[in-house]
Each structure stands twice: as structure tokens, then as C-alpha cells.
Image (tube, rainbow, N blue to C red; front, side, top):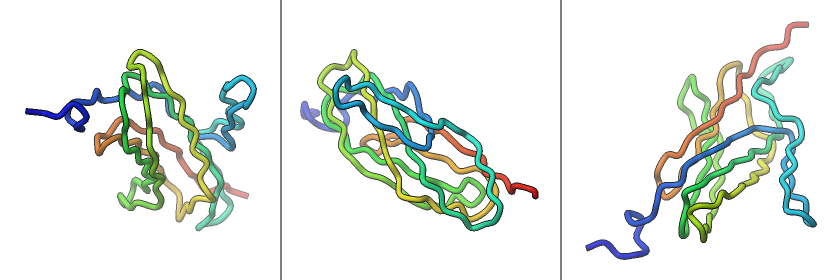
Amino acid sequence: MVEEDSVESKPIPFLIAALVCDAAVSDPSTGKKNLIGIFDRIKAIKFPVKRQMSLYLKVTDAEGDYDTEVRYIQMSTGKLLAKAKGKLHATDKHSSLDLLIDFPPLLIPEEGRYEFQLWANSVFLGTTSIDVVQQRQ
């Protein structure tokens, strides 16, 4: 028998959108989300480099409480470079929720693809990525 609040009984949230940007803020008077400088590609003069990034995530089909984790992964090595953990509370499965995550400057050790992976209650929901290239002078 499965308990009502167990992980198995919760719907698996569906990731609608995942965007990387320079800044993500919520307007206190309207609740609207403002994304500034959306990108999926970075040019760097030298490596390693650190870069401030924010992440906007939109999910639906969630109901109840979830432990969330965003993993920042260097794809060529599979190395976990950073992660952010949090809680998600959803009261209406038919509504969507916006999540804004401001990361401290993130390490970019070399050229390549870097991925942000979203997990809820240890279930992989989806990903977005950025490509980093060396800027030629």
C-alpha cells in the first residue's frame, strides 16, 4: 500500500521551459517574470572563466511538495560543476509554476557544452544547455 504523501503517489512535473539568461527577476507588484539577456552561447577570450548566470524554469502537472535540484554539468567530462537545491510546492496540478534561480559566477573550465539539468524528487525532468567557444581576436 502506498501512502498518500509518498514520492510514488505524486505526479511527475512536466518541464515546459528552461532558459539561461543574465538575470531573472520577479516584479513584486505583478508577479510577472522578467528575463534579461537570454542566451545559449558564450564566447570567452581565455579559460578557465567564471560567468554569472540565471535560470528560468516553468513546470506544470505538479501537485504537492517536491525536493528539487538543478545540476550544472560539463558535458565532455560528465563532471558536476555546481548544483542548486530547493523545494517546490504546488497546489493545483493544472497550473504552471515559474522558478528563478540566480547562480553565483559559474566555472567554465574550457570550450564545450554545459548543461543545466532539472530533477524533482530524484526524477529527471529535463535540461537546457549552453555552448561555450573561444573568442578569436
